[in-house]
Image (cartoon, rainbow over all chains, first blue to last red):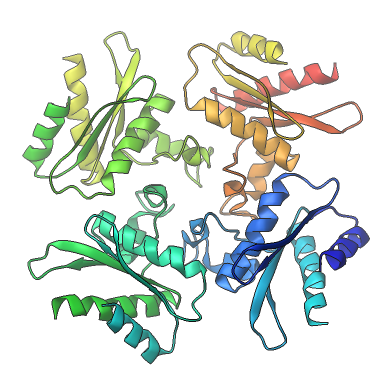
Length: 124
Length: 124
Length: 124
Length: 124
């Protein structure tokens, strides 16, 4: 998955951090590409953490965890979570959550695109 | 109370965490049902904590602790509090606060329903 | 000042925490009245801290430190600050800041009233 | 840069804290002028930190890291960041980021003006 994410980021000509956690939210792999802003490290980790803790992509989490949504303050639990896209839940062929991936460093749309490409490796 | 909450959650076919604290906000009991999202652990605890620290259900707390309400930043005190429902104050027959219960893992409406059923055990 | 605050709170029939800090934000005195909600302890301390760190009453601080105002995130600095009233700057007869007082536990209006009565002791 | 910032602040008759960090966000220099509010210390440091971690002036960071913008919660990552002006990225003649400067203690407009004057020293 890290390899696929790196290849996609290079193809898009952006620099990102990639963070993969298991189903219990523990780190499995992390990679920071040359030239990525340092602020993205914490964000990639928290995107993956948000996705696995709530079994929900961070873009969907953003729909409920916001001052104008119905679960404001949710984003401040669990050590600080991320209310925008780039964190994806990873499921196996049976639909069981096996972990999550978080990508940060490019635009949110690009972060999501890279995470999506990487997550397909799991099922392939 | 834990037994009543578990029974109600099973009846509703949802998985939740249940957290009970005493009047001084110290943990009394905690239970995580199989299959509950891990993010709900911290939330159940903070819902109970919010309710007992302010002697107010967390749904009522949400009415004042919000950027659009008159006590914004209140939700960020005391280590982080919860501005949505699922935390209920527990009172004895004389109306004295004896603790609080927090439920998280299902929809907010379901969390509140389960906490309400459990809290009735105390008075019964 | 603590005595004056206690007397005023008793006269108003409310229970509050009173926190007084010096010009360097270190605690000078703290008092929790019987029956005050436990959540008010942290808030009284942070109201006093907010007022002295910014040499500004916490009600005025709220005007700038809010998502809809021009210094959003200011409220999250310095370990967490308070964007509503009840923290007052204390100045000597020459107008020099000597500390601050924070009151919490009643309504914000009552908290401010009690802090105001107490702060007059300093000048008298 | 510190000398230039101090001279500009004195010329404007304001008191500020000045914080300079390197490209890896580590402190290089810090100065608190006599009479600056104590709350400004943490803010100056966080302004510099915000600018270097995201290679973006904190005034631009504010455009994306806000409840009403598309990357809400970004401001709560990396230990707490600043969503208003006064943090500037420092680049060398080739455009490489070499660090950042944060100024706090006066109005945001004045903080930015002082940081701008100081940052020109680097290129001169």
